Length: 68
View 1 (cartoon, rainbow, N blue to C red):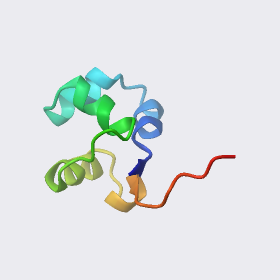
View 2 (cartoon, one colour):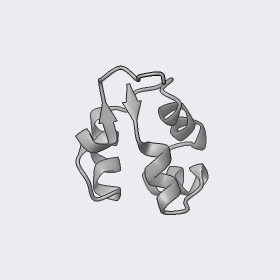
View 3 (spheres, rainbow, N blue to C red):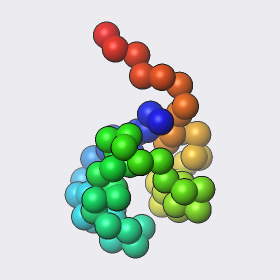
């Protein structure tokens, strides 16, 4: 699943560890979500959306990534 988590986190100048602490998950979990190796549970997706004050759909997309 494609996501904008890395971009949203960088805009706030948060490290993966900072975001992990805010979400009460491990830094490794944040990394796995950012790299697309792990899709978050629905409750975690809602927490991310609330934290970034946006919709789940604006963070995650099921559209395949296009390679330029």
